[in-house]
Length: 63
Picture 1: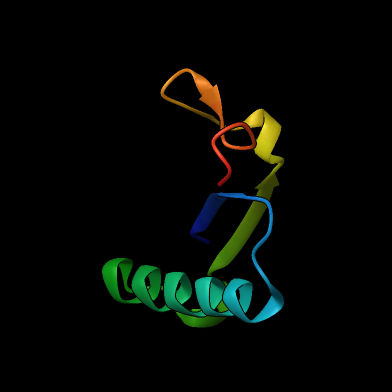
Picture 2: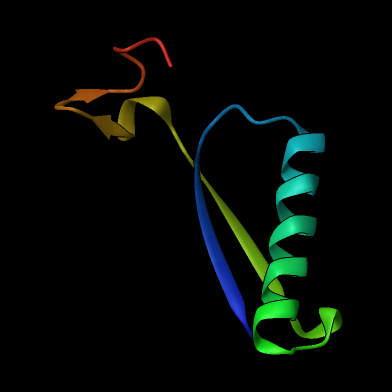
């Protein structure tokens, strides 16, 4: 059972999250030959103030 863990900066809407799950599922299924039903995708939302970019938080950078 392949498992993909995806970290995203908080703020994606439900449609975007569904698209990530669908496309990652397709990619893993194709790459390793696993049936789609066996693929698991876990999205972890990270608060903007906990995501660092170039020494600053994404929140401070306005992302």
